[in-house]
Image: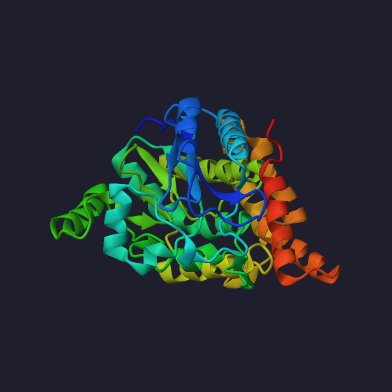
Length: 377
């Protein structure tokens, strides 16, 4: 077996807010997407709702290359949005948007999805990030998908950015997951013994007319139908670019570590979906604050301790992939908190200073606008 390329591609979804009111827009300016497309040559697309826009990097050979491309994409879309009186927000929910007021993008695929899923999909005023890692071999892609599921909650905890929903502090660090889980075919993936078994599962759904293809399998990690990649989808979008790059680097390093085990005829232990789902809930609820279950020890372990174990396991891989600084940035995230922490703190600080509920939520949006551009040249 030849070593996978471990190329990286990152997709991010952003919210578009009115510069004056800080509210989500209901209708995208007709010239905005066209202007973005002319500048970014196929790297930007509309999303299900008109208040959203998505970008995707090129196929990148290194994490550093992915960071540079993503910085260019964020900066360009933000600049175009500003010229239309809008601002860009990299967060998985808007602090006070009402989902029933949002308008769908006029596109045949989105119309079909709405007809199929109805109110469930209309509530998706949420944004995420997806990380593609190049793994050409079908069998290896399925094998690594089974094993990497273990660490998905750890990645979710590190990038939470959705504590508010429709003007309420939900008490969760990632309320986006709660909204997303109303969709079918989501969550931790099934475990498969081979690519053929996965394909047979997919063929049943397609032949029954339930889905057209694998793009409507929306697991937290999945074999991409469009590319020879293993696509991680569990994470909230990180407000700061440097945090996005950190999560992506940890994901690709973990996959390379698992590949090294396989070369030695070893593998990461497979745990039941029920146990992994419990950690997923803890990450969704508490983020990095209350630890995750270490299944080997049978105990909840502080996240910082788990992170150090992850970094140690991936030291060789981070060095080989040239992203040691990027994965070690996770320590800074723990020290200063994720976007979810900043949002809640900003809200409470505003309330303590005498702001109304709406003013406090608008202060959160202002903070998100500023932090979305942090590190963008």
